[in-house]
Image (cartoon, rainbow, N blue to C red; front, side, top):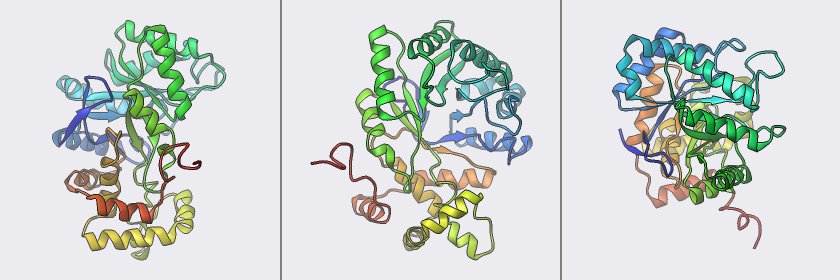
Length: 324
């Protein structure tokens, strides 16, 4: 395993993170525990989850699965960087979601209880809340840090100007600044290159890309379909039809390179400046092992240019991408 710092912080994290969104939904608890065991054995220390993950509203099922795994061996807690998120609805009550101070406080306490720990290494704001004043949200987050319940703060699904606002607001207050941003980023979805990535690099924020395989489209979807296998969710199947030519060319390119498409897609992210750790979301131990193989792939400048030709991005940061 390779390691790096999370943004400008002194926190060391593995170059690949373990995403747990499938735990409790597609992956039963015993298999989820096996994935966690294998990930830690292979040197993965960044474990990413969210309070909304799971199959039942408000149950925090995925956090409970991680908590039961930690309870089996208390020494495991010090071996991982545990990150969860706050924003999504955890019930039907009016204050059961979003980023009000009352919800942030309760959501953090509930996550700590489900995870069976006294602190979160990273608490990430899962989305922007356009109706709660930023002062209220950030004061509540800073209080959790002051209380020792949270060590680092992060964001997720923020636009470039949201990232800038968060950083400048924290600087103005002389308080805690976010050290990470989690955004969708892959060969097929490169919008973050316009403003999110430049903002992250400017403020020393580590980017944690999620959906590195774009719902499975970049993991050999056409090859699986030809073999009568699973192509993914209905949304992924529709997108596959839209991107069929590019995906077909990509799978041939990977075959010529003698590398698995899923591994190449993750490796490409690892070569992008500003990316800290792509988040893998395996349903099985085998998928985890396949994803970890990305660390063994090195793409030179010519290879990266070939991938850019297959999946053109926005041609640079804003405003140069669309203006003189």
